[in-house]
Image 1: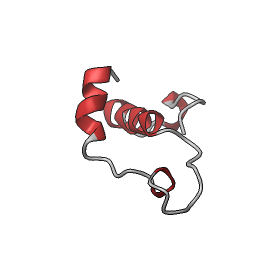
Image 2 (image 1 turned 90 degrees about the vertical axis):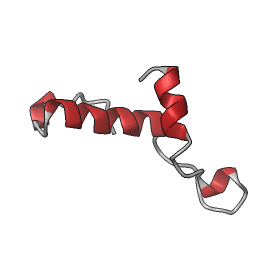
Image 3 (image 1 turned 135 degrees about the horizontal axis):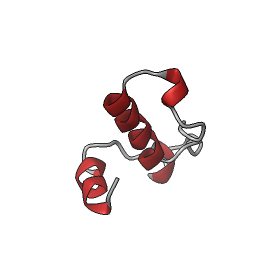
Image 4 (image 1 turned 90 degrees about the horizontal axis):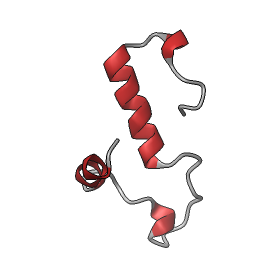
Length: 56
């Protein structure tokens, strides 16, 4: 994902509560990695063997 694509998508994603001081704990994965994982599945389908091991 390019930085320009990230800027467009970031506006529609919620801000984590722990970043705003409302409690909670930090997330295990960054949003960019999660969106990259979703885009990979949309592009390639749900072929389990095709999903890279480092995607969340």
